[in-house]
Length: 99
Image (cartoon, rainbow, N blue to C red; front, top):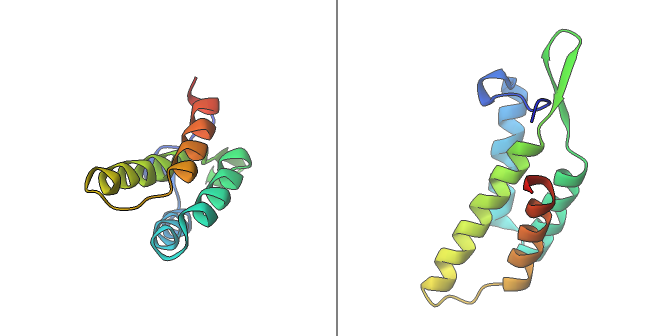
């Protein structure tokens, strides 16, 4: 997508926010995380990549969502109890922007 900055274009602050989001992913209940992440996918933040030029970072949120889905799938494969509804809801949201 043309409005998406590359990772190297993101400011240090944007990178910090992404890392905080990943940390949050590990600290809250899956459905709470999914709801918050879907909000960010639907209404992504924008970062200034150069003076006067802003681009949204939806692709970053989608990347985090995919990581969550992969982790959930791995846990399920190991026999752990997972919230499949949360995972499926998140996958549906990703599909809206990737298809």
